[in-house]
Length: 472
Ligand code: NAD
Image 1 (cartoon, rainbow, N blue to C red):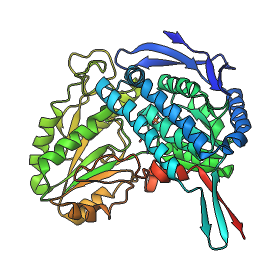
Image 2: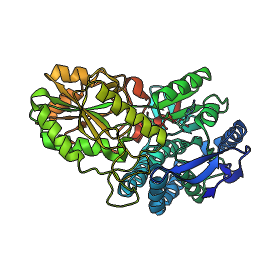
Image 3: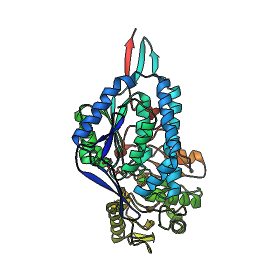
Image 4: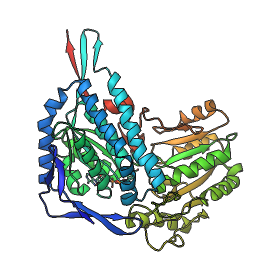
């Protein structure tokens, strides 16, 4: 087991100021993997001071200099792809195939997309007698969760640096090892000291210290709605800009005339990916009541192919959840739904057979769930799909829009036009039409309690810019 005792500050690994550490547990074996320092306010002060000191120099770099530095960073991600995947599998439990394709592959795709955005972005615009300049927003605090640990780091750090901002990162305490690997990759990319800094530790200590730190200009947060609210309040008091990417309870709406079997199969793959720990997961499948039993049978057949197992085995499609706490939470939702009258179409709250150790949960499909109940309204963040019947399109829209969230969703219909017309009426930030693919340049973010601000593409870069107008 590795014991780390440093943070990445000012271009070097600097000893932590406090004695406390956080153990990182392998969720498949329940064994400790490593310990990292639990940062203190003094560590945060040092990191913010380093970022502030580096800010004027980095803001003054040319587009070409930033492109060169970020290309080296992206190339470092490519060179470390295998290590990224095995690290995420070890600390998060993501099955290795998905870890390589998505946990490592998506950050590379996103970093590459930002290079394209930076190469062509107009930082200067003429508006009448004014010239409007897009300038860096300043020193950024990036606070990230554990479910796509590297993707969510890259989706903040790369556009912030591209915009000319400097950064202090606070990664999740559940997945600090891939964050340390990222810091090593940044170190190898030869950025000026202090442009990127990282302090590991608890959200309530390091995250909270960053959110109300006078040396921070912008807080970019991804995580739960509850913590997002606290960060928004704190940042608001300091008149800091804030971007919040929060939870979801996304609906997959299958309209009559759609390819039901395909829609259900893709939904099962979507909701069990990363063991259901995906903010955009389609956790509610909405089908017409005449097709309800057919959809349930299709879902049960598809779910049976997801046997939980060792995430390091390339044949495994469903790994453990990240932690014992998360497993108990997910089981609690399944038990609560069944007690409330829901029908178990697949899975259940018991530990999967043959897996005595590890934070595993059975892939679960629930029918006859009250649309107002917790299982249909709250983010479960585990391999649990709720299938809901609707009477007609208006009813489907009412159910789809009937939660506090609005992050993602999907619509399937006989043709794209019909599906798109329905999608336009959904209160949500992203909708996939008849199985549309992920686009790393499309703006990503939430309506309602799923957040404020957008990541990815041009919109993601602009989160880290502020404008100045000169009148002539
Ligand atoms: P979380 O809110 O518990 O933690 C997120 C981060 O915030 C962690 O680094 C944590 O240490 C920190 N934090 C915790 N309390 C804090 C405080 N008081 N002040 C400052 N920072 C604090 O979320 P999580 O459990 O790590 O992640 C799961 C959640 O993230 C889910 O709700 C999921 O939907 C959401 N998520 C959203 C997106 C998106 O893009 N919208 C993407 C991934 C995950």
